[in-house]
Image (cartoon, rainbow, N blue to C red; front, side):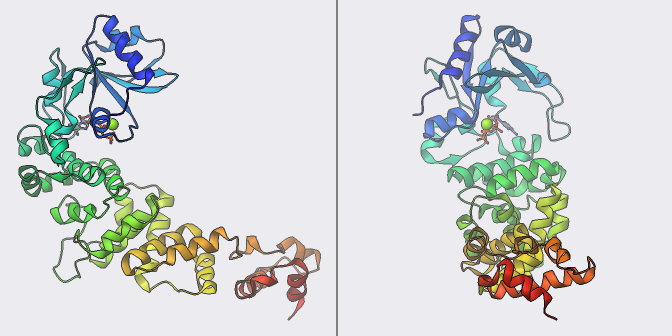
Length: 402
Ligand code: ATP
Ligand code: MG
């Protein structure tokens, strides 16, 4: 089991010496028991916001309404949250109000899955009212309470179930899974940002093929076209296409573009651009991923180096890498490795990489007009086929040829 780092132990001790109760909770405890790397530490406490603030020299009230204070230490940031039970979820997203409570069980009850609903004191005393430990051993994602009720309160939990299953390699317990099938349409009301973040975590996990399950189960309701039953089922979790995503580098753009290519070839969206925009991805990501998916869908990517360099020159390195990733996922092969070789090998595929500049040509007496651009393009075209000619003297001479 991973050890509690000093700065986190210090926070637990300070809260306890101040007369409050304090526990490690949520994902950090789950990952600690699994021996996984822990990226953020969460502490639950009986202390209220103002009391937490008064105990530590440096704090930020991150979510005062929800009782969360971020404690800043030299070892890192730790979120400290007052024990609470959630009120009504009228917008199916965030509770309208939270009630601060003194009972740890109430706090654990509001949490999504049994493996996320455990707590541990600094001394190692574990509270595990829903048998999270048993589910860690059985490798199961199971809702705390009635799955339908929990998914109706917050539909994002359905995405989270698939996300944890993809990240941890756990199965989803059968009643939890059956409820996802029934409650899936509720995801239509979720904000694009929340859906985007969970989808990206699935795409970047060791089992990205589970995005196919999210689509088939209907979690993208209202964000994708309906299945028309005519397309080849590339979205099946078993499909070699989706499984190939796991072989790509852990790069969000490469994974989004290949997901889009699979969606488009399965006729679940007419436009990768529209889908990615609706998911509120940033403009640069939308541009590269949409151009990449479209290029790979239009035709298989070329294999020879000059043709790959022309593609790089035409759509730019970001979109070309996305196109190569989508090509690998749709058809197999090693186009992405070839593209990476061209890029990292420093081979010339753009005017900026030519051994002469526009200024060199102007100094030789060529007028700074459209003709100049055409000459540079011709030189690039030549260098793409003859990389050995990317030398100043050779290109100066060629520039003067009619
Ligand atoms: P990770 O940080 O590895 O993504 P995590 O389990 O820590 O996973 P967070 O989103 O950081 O997930 O949330 C911390 C804890 O808060 C969870 O473990 C869970 O107990 C609770 N939680 C988070 N989101 C929800 C939710 N939508 N419904 C119920 N409980 C939640
Ligand atoms: Mg967390």
